[in-house]
Length: 136
Image (cartoon, rainbow, N blue to C red; front, side, top):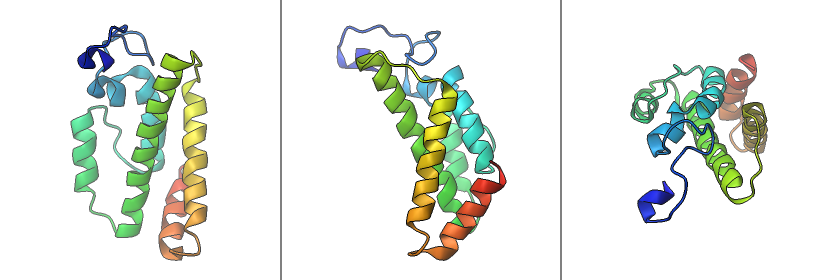
């Protein structure tokens, strides 16, 4: 991605080192990111797709109730955030986490978010928690 901005860096994906980095590869065609996404999508009862456009379309087409819709959106946002954070950590600090560590960070973030809305939106928190913990 940085090459597109005129910076002279290795064009290989920092997560898998096997393909040229792009938004489409990084989210979610890369073996590393796909393994993270597969686990999180399962927990949200989403079909595991690895095309950025297909995932966005799937999220736009969700026709569940509002409370159940929040969890897949929250989880997808967390996956994107943590994959990008891992990519930047590898680039700038040369630190590497396995996919299981990223999955654990996402799980913790989702649990914290569910806990934080428990009193403000109890119905939504309960619905999302049931789905999240049911498939853990």
